[in-house]
Image 1 (cartoon, one colour):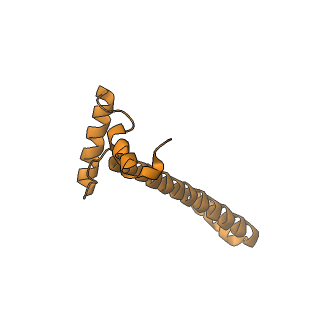
Image 2 (cartoon, one colour; image 1 turned 30 degrees about the horizontal axis):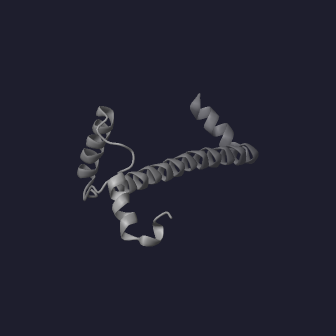
Image 3 (tube, helix red, strand yellow; image 1 turned 60 degrees about the vertical axis):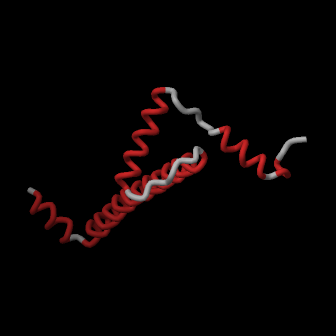
Length: 103
């Protein structure tokens, strides 16, 4: 059955062109989703790195450290130990820059 379908498609130039176009569209859709997923993952990792810098925590040096540190952060959020913003860090930043202080 599949053999006869392949023979029919390859025997007709019009069917072959349609099949190639459909195949290219499917590959394009899959690659588009993979690129979108990679961009979202990059944005999430960037946001996580910004969070670590904001809270004064060291950035992980390996993927294993990244996973461990992420797991600890999620657990601490679930336990209600940390706020979203480290206000002490920002107070130090503002105190260091007199032009940022409000009048």
